[in-house]
Length: 122
Length: 106
Image 1 (spheres, each protein chain N blue to C red):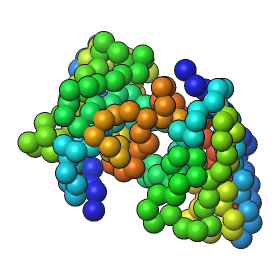
Image 2: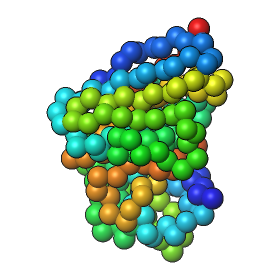
Image 3: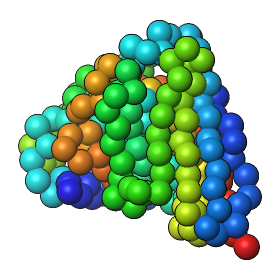
């Protein structure tokens, strides 16, 4: 059974940094691309970033480009999202999600974690 | 960027009734269209990909259809667990979600 467990969320001041982690199990982690998707309180879903199975190719939404960095450690079956220069509008539940192929290209999201809440506020 | 518009915003129905949810894209998306269900307090769950292909474990009463710019998610007979928010998702050149349709108990 695919399991994705996010951690690292919390309260951070505007301009601060936070690193999210997503521990994966139940599948061969390095064989699948992964994504981060966020959901502001009471709002819809917004795709944030994606990474190929090898980690060699990354993609970002315009809203986070230059501030967020996605990475993965296939030896630890863990996905990361380094978030810098955080803004109030980054406040959201952040979900990690598995894609069905190794390349992050034209993929749906076939498994989701339970999410971790990031609150950016002074 | 492809913009997805879902309608209606809220659908008020009774258990056993048929639910028809619409997702319209601002440009052709070549069936690169998925549907997710999100129950309160839970993560989204994949229902449909490729416009009409069901994910593993999705019941027969759920189906997806459409092509080009117009897609539909149909639940033929609503069960209590179907009352939730549904999102469509384009996973092509841009990765965008619709704003969601809430299916609530009438």
